[in-house]
Length: 337
Image (tube, rainbow, N blue to C red):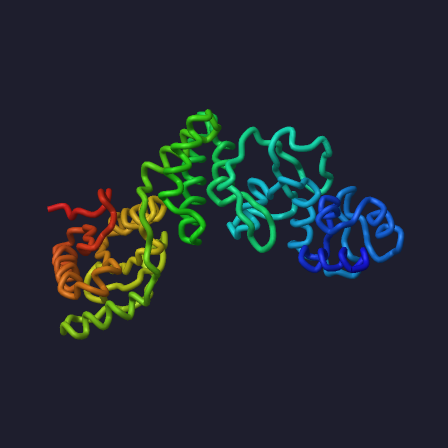
């Protein structure tokens, strides 16, 4: 095979790119590299990376070029990893890459380089052809930005949201979080305090997928002969609280249907309970119907709604959860008898 055919073969597998460290596996050398740059069919992106002229520019090409420029042994790092993995609030404008310390004396030019003291092999994955840190490893890097005591509170909130988002996306497991905390904290890594506290609030487990719970609630009430509810109504007066899943037309009662996917993490619980407090302050009773009961315990759903209507009829605001509530200690949950 002609040397340039080998270059093209490699570029077809690498977003139109070829890196200098690809030369030996291709059976090519520096002379072929120089000939490629001289023949007008290849453009230099850096000292270490060239691209086939005419190959379409894309985020994927730019990200992969940055990693190849710092390779071998490099990966996408920190916020760039989070952006590549699909986390909201992170972008690919300013790329960050990482590799082990003393791996190479050549400095990359396509991204900011971080040389790491220790990078565990299982903290690296390949996503859409790009070597990147796992979501957990990247989130730990973000937690390190909040290690100072003055930033701990806001860090706890923001990193908790990231972990919960990663959990929903299937990129983070609580078992993996606990394993990482136990392994990395012994090395004195920044961010340990935040990550350990967040791990303690997230015992290992998983969540099933969400279903059409509002329709399911209406079906249960109809079969039981119960008075119906109105769906998706905005509640609140001068300070709107938001849209409720269901409301009772005759009583100050809001009924929420909670899935196990979007209402079980600590961040979700805190947000929900803040919402319930606002509803209580506005004079509403809240009945929370959980997915497991909606699909497997009709009697409990009907009973919870009946009790909630009793509180609302007495103008005694309360929050009542159906028996399937997964929150071990809901701060807002037990009705005030």
